[in-house]
Length: 289
Image 1: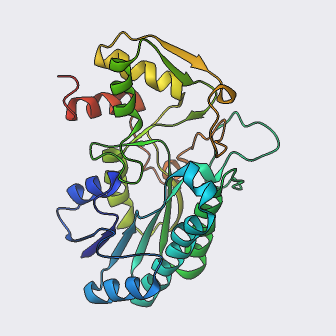
Image 2: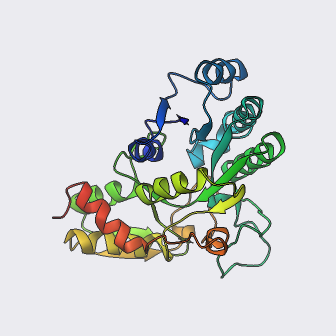
């Protein structure tokens, strides 16, 4: 079966391409396809006629989305629509990647993980544009898997962000006497290798719908950083701060932990704890033996 991956050179796309070895893989980068351009999508998909499309392409610079609202919605909403429309025309299955940032805007503070059956209330333009993309995918492509995930880290780094959080913290820990990291934003760090493997398992089923896929457990960015440095054997002090002490243009959810409820109901939730996945990442990157 032909599987087409958009954003194939990105953090998740790279690992997807590695685990799709048993399929006829069609890896496309932004040089091959521009998802916000319907003619580009039609041309690429019609050329290859894939049976499964995995759309990882997105505009993921969360703060920049606040200033570039049109670009955010052009890529994350209309781009998702374009992919969905052409996937439906081809009779292809569509796996569309989304985010925990579709949550967090509720009036009452959240303290329990979100399931796929909770109503999204996004805070930021990024979150709103990704939710709009989800809705368009649901409307235009019958055989869809919408995969929400969180706090991705992968060996390839994030092409759209110029690296990833782990590498940034390791670098800063060597440059500074101490690190100050936000301790009031709680999420589920997720290794792209684990996410890619689960997507490949899911995409060949008929279990269409919305799925949360993250590594097990939750932490704040401060807790994540302390575990990174502990595993790497780095003793630089880490100081917890509040979001108010580290102002950013886009508002982030204070709590955006995802519950893999749909996978669990299907007996498919074997995602491992995030510290275990983090250790494997550090080994893969050569930071630890």
